[in-house]
Each structure stands twice: as C-alpha cells, then as structure tokens.
Length: 337
Image (tube, rainbow, N blue to C red):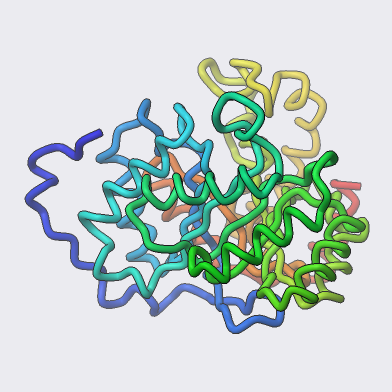
C-alpha cells in the first residue's frame, strides 16, 4: 500500500498543544499513564481502506493527545494489513515521536494456516510477534497481549512465552484480553512469579455489556492491573445511528457477526431512553457511553475506533463531561438493568 504522492511530500509536525486537554490515567499500579481515550485499529486500517484516511485519523489522534495505538496480528482485512499500513504511516509520520507513543499488538486468534497459527502456544506467540514487528517496522512494542485464553495449552507455557518476549526486549509490558476472572487471577500469579510487568487487561465493556462487573474488575484491582474497555459503543448501538430505525448500509442492516437487526430491535427502547439522558447532559449518546465507562472504577482507558477525523474528535469531546450526578446514575441503572 502506498500513501498518495501529494501526502508523501508533506512533513507531519505534531501539534505543540497535543498534551493540553487529554486526560491521562494510571494503568493499574504500574508507572504507565494511558490517555483516557485510546485508538483501536481493528477497522478502517486494512488494505481495503484508504490509507490516506487512516493516516489522517492517526495524525488527528496524536494531535489530540492520544498516545496509545492498539493493533493485533489479524486486524485488516486481510490479516496483517492494519499492522503493515500502520508501519508505513509510522515510518513517514511518527518515527521521531516513537518515545511518546504506547503501541500495542496481540496474538491469539487465527492468523496463518496449520497448527502453529492460532491460540496460545509458545511457537505461535513468539513467531507472531516477530512477524508483527516486521510489518510495523518497530524494534519493540510497548505492550503485547495474549488475545484470548487457550483451553488446550497449559497457561504456564503461554505466560512463560510472554515473559521471554519481555526479556528478549520485544515488548516492555504484558497484557491479556478476554480472560475470565479465574483465568486472570492465575495468569497474574504466574506472571508475578516470573517477575514480568503485567499491567493491562483488555475487555469488552459497555452500558449494554457489563460482564466485567461480575468479578473481573475486582480481580484486576486486587492484582494491581488496569482495564482498557473495547466496544464501548456496543458495535454502534450506543450512538444516534439507530434512533429512527435501521439505516441501509449500516452494520446492523448487513447483519454482520457482531451486530444484527434483532439486537438493535431488542434494545431500541433502551437506546432512546439513554439518548434522552445524554441530551440532558449536552452530550451525544456515544459521548455519554464513553464518559460512563471512564466514570467506572478501575478503567484506565476506553478504546475507540474511528472512520474519520471528525468522528474521532466527536468521541474525544466526551472528556468535557466526565461527572455524573447520583440522579443520572440512578436513571441509567434503571434503563440498563
């Protein structure tokens, strides 16, 4: 993939005010501060997307003080293409800012054919990160995650591989994603024995998906680990997109894996009620959904996607109102219960 010629000649200079308005939260009990809002490259950064748009989003993010960019080996499509595009953009725009960035990647889902391209073996994790670093043109990532638990590989093997990755200098910190409370507790114990900095758990969390409140957040707090929430807008349901029905071309209209018409129709009353609360706070529904997550104890950062710089700016504006009155919290609780 190539960035268009006009853009090739532009030198990117980051905004001198980039740290003036972003809020930074401590990540568990570590020394790391994460921006309250981080940028995920799950969608809109693959070979099927405009690389110039991806570049504009990344530049806008950094200018707003977003220092944390989150990737995974299989983000695209096709697999690997988000990392490769990121590497191209990083090389042109962000190389001189490397020490101001906190870059993540992951391995754990299907990546290449055969028995060594999935799950949690030592073979897969180390090979995958080596490939990721080449695609991103990086010497190391700031944090490397195991993307999901592997029921068939001993947890000791997976955690030792992560420990060795840190010792080899390929990652500074370790994270896990999609682990349940018991698995998280065991992983934390093993990594503590191995003397490896385990600082972050990436979990799906939104007003409509609160499984982390059932033990995981407490487990993380007990172990000094932060939580970064992904899918904060419930795949778009917590936006104004579906207030007047399901628009043609939307994710729900296409009945994609993570969101279908039935999901939206089941939740439409709740969406409308939450939208009214957001309006009374001078926020859009999406902004209130992000603010609500950042109000929860133990959330270090909220991971958002963006299809344009405008959408990114709108979501970052959530930070202008992060407080909730007892009355608002009580009404929200009734709506989502």
